[in-house]
Amino acid sequence: MPFSIAVLGSFVYVYITGTLELSGDGLGRFVLIYLVSLLYVSTFFSLGLMISALAQRNATALLMALMVWICWILIIPNVAPVAAGLLAPAPSRQTIDAETRMIDEEYRLLMQSGSRSRNLDQSERQELQTEQEARKDKLEKFYRDKTRTQIELGKNLARLSPSACSLFAMTRLAGTGPILFDQFHQAMVRFQDQHQQYMQGFYASDKIEWGPTGMTMKDPDWFIAADLPHFRMYEESLSASLDAALPDLLLVLMYNVIFFLLAYVFFMRYDVT
Picture 1 (cartoon, rainbow, N blue to C red):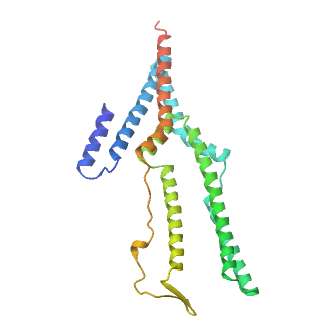
Picture 2 (cartoon, rainbow, N blue to C red):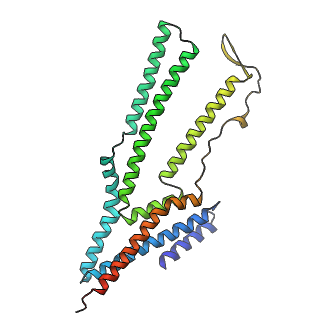
Picture 3 (cartoon, rainbow, N blue to C red):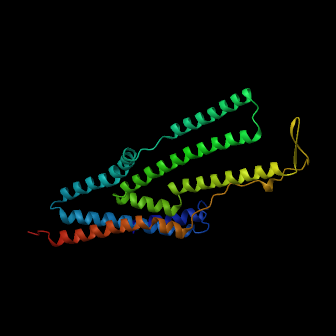
């Protein structure tokens, strides 16, 4: 009850003051996050009940509860990324950027040597540039795959803690966390493709002409801002977020049920003498 009063009171306050503006399915996400929080709180109630039924003395129960809390809240979630880095190593961003610069430098040297020895035509330049972009894309894909594997392993190890499970569920329902990075990357790739198509269509149009001095514009009013591609990120729907968070929700519920059943068993076997 104190938690519910604090959450709902804070929600009403920030909504009335205009600090919080709910749009779309924002209210549904807030309600689901609130329910997940209640489930998480009840998990630790069940855990405390189990420890109380297991221990014979209050001091022992308090010490056991403190040790379990430290292990599950502090140690496991923080050790999981370190263990994942050792079990599934991934190259650093600095390493990938250094190799990308080496590819660009190699392309520049090839263009210089080709220009000195012989004149490269447009098709040969395009072929070299295509090969360069393919190598960079392959390197970037390798980095993303390795990083994604490491992240997923770290998340699976952290799920040994109900704290991590509830955190993953709430961040997915809120639309933050790793899913936000994936949405940004998809939007960036989509924008780059649209921009490339726009430039190809622009160069192939009759708005420009090539002369001895380079490119010139035929029409002084050639620029149309509405034709430019726009960077857009699409938010995951509430149903999709709930489906993705469902495994973590079931894990928190499983922890809750297990602790409660163990508390019942220990209580029935408790020596009252």
